[in-house]
Image (spheres, helix red, strand yellow):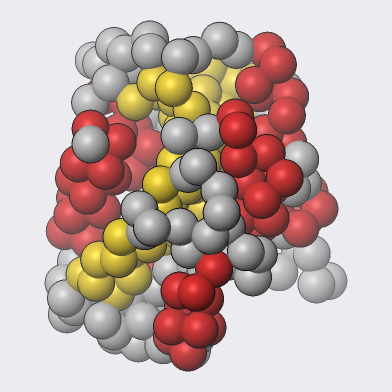
Length: 215
């Protein structure tokens, strides 16, 4: 019952719809959102108990802007059971620049993977997440994005986790954003009410990630 009780994507047909710029390719670990770029890729770990394709909107938009995105399917929709799935992706595909990102628990698990594999990545991106691992001595730039109305993310953990971040660490708070706004799975239990649409939150997030990668 527990593993079958998860947040479903609100519109699966829309999530699986390719665009003029982006193809959706099923892989051994999930999906590749293949856009016009061929130099830079981002591996994405979904949040706990969220259907992976709920993140399609944000990943398709990144791909359309030249950042190919690998969406990782996690066993039982829990990233703790698939921390090392980035290994297989990086063995099977070749890019000059790799980034790792994750939402909520997916972000924490991405940080755990990056802690042992920081030499493989140029950057790590948290969406409503934080690291319990000390990354302060890693040659890795880190971006943390969270919403001002997020009631699921423990901000005290974000604050206390700053001491684990490298010098290149950046934070950005999306005014009016909440915990679920990075994806399309509806309302999350315990979350704050967003004062902006999920579409706006996702647009802001995409731009901040693009700016971060372009630095």
